[in-house]
Length: 450
Image 1: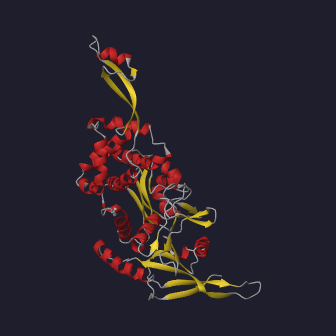
Image 2 (image 1 turned 90 degrees about the vertical axis):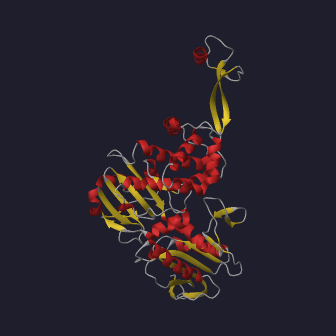
């Protein structure tokens, strides 16, 4: 097996990709939308659910003689070639930070050390299984999926279209029954049957019941809604769902669930990655995970508008003009703070990032803004004071009332094991929150916005 490990938000010479040239050729300079259509599973869905992942973002983008990675973390394969994109805080073959984000945000078991498993395809498959509860819960918020199906009967209460061929086959000589069929609006349809087959498949795994207990109410609803479930119908149900994807915009969450179920169930027959030309994998949006994790840390201090959930929408102008979703708005209206979660390295936060947060600060009468980012160095916060004046009049000077602070959460880089990493993260999280107390005690390095 040919393996290459790289990190997010970094650059690497193209020559280092030479031993996985087939895989590189299939993903380099292609957008995430193109990659997803080829079979890569992206979490969360790039176009609808993630503000930080856009459909034109690339996994590997050519920059002269190097490839540059973005906020995407995950696993890709093609034939016997593998590419693992770790978080930039990984070390010594362990990506404890990525595991920690998955653990906090998605309640994932510890399966992140992709390289330690001899069977990389099984490691990838575990990711799909552990995502199932999240997708099931999200879809079921819309209620059970219901659609028209054609039911076949053979009795004396004819209500639909007579099936002549089946009638002759079953009712010769005539005994009073008539074979007919009719369309009915039912919960027991091919999609809900697909979900039921996935549930039954996961149940047979050693960790299956523990995984499904997180969504026990949703699982019960699916089981109750599918009385027609038969284990031997699995392949027929898979084929029906491959041909009939969910199309209604209201049930877009069910489309994501349908796609995930198909990947899980088809793995049994077609092991992920069979064939030398097939590209496969699973990618996570590191920026989305980071923002959701930060919300868990400061949700008692900040409101958290959410674009993908259409919650907490704000407007820039009167008349419902200028829809915006700031990442975080402090609950203290007297000393309003605007905060923006950035998964980028500190040096990459600038230009449009500044303009965005300053616009939000102006909208909410906030004097202070924050960029909340992960850092490895443990450096002091960087305080940026807004300038006043103009270079034309040679009267530029820093203001004392408008500031933006780059506030990093320290990430342990030398933890001997995951348990130690989690303990140290708890200490750093407490230190991180202290910045938002009335009298924060932390060092600040000042600079000017020129």
